[in-house]
Image 1: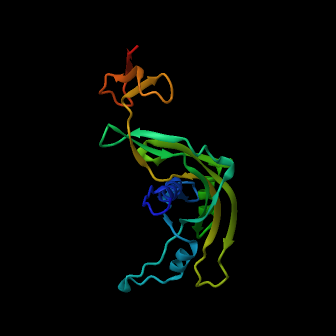
Image 2 (image 1 turned 180 degrees about the vertical axis):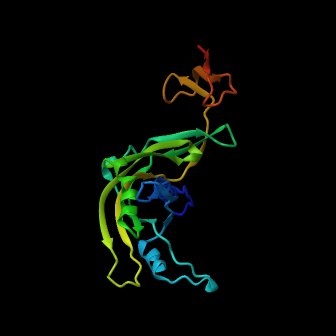
Image 3 (image 1 turned 135 degrees about the vertical axis):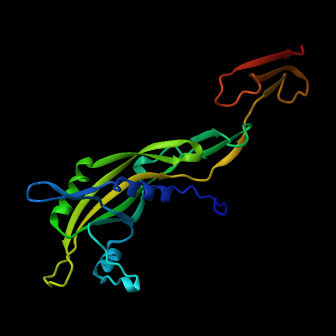
Amino acid sequence: MFGTYFYNKNIRNIVILFGTVFNDIIVRRVNSSNVTQEEFRVPIAYGPAEKFLVRLREATDISKGKVGLTLPRMSFEFTAINYDSTRKLVTTKQFKKVHASDNTKLTTVYNPVPYDFDFTLSVMVKNSDDGTQILEQILPYFSPEYQVTMNEMSSMGIKRDIPIIFTGLSTEDSYEGDFLTRRALIHTLTFTVKAFLYGPTSDVGIIKEVDINKYNTTTSTTKISNTDVKPDPTSADVDDAYGYTTTQTDYY
């Protein structure tokens, strides 16, 4: 089991999938006449909210290459993984695909193992209206889950609809009353992604001929018949339309 290297990038792709869901959030600012003065996409990056809050408190000093963080922005973080026995699949079933460079072989992989991946999404804003704009572009899509189609194993052509389940929201206001302190209003949303992890792939030869010899008894060495089965045409691949040619030879 262990000792054979493989890396399907399943976890990496799940993290990317989660972040991509929230990479097109817009904030619009209007004046008292409801005329748009500013509109921009909210940046999102991977990492804990605390990392960005530290940068928020840093003073801008161009001469030293230090640029203060601007709000609003979002960050997300992968926080936990747990096995989900309720979604267990038949372990002996395999996915099969013609080998990418050798059509006489099949690439196979067994059914994946179900895991729940927990994520936090932190929405950091400096005023409440920015925060509510962002939340209202996210929460209506989760009731409480949102389905996203994912290329689980692109090398095998396996796609699956992955549920992202919203599990909670908390809000924190870091403003402490000092006029020199920059305010950061933080909305923390938690989610569970119900995804799968795959094991290693393996290559096996494609059976293109079956040859059956029949004997009188289990101990006999004298054949009484032979049956030979081949695909028609013999050059057919797994995904082609083909039939079978059966040749029967009786010796007695």
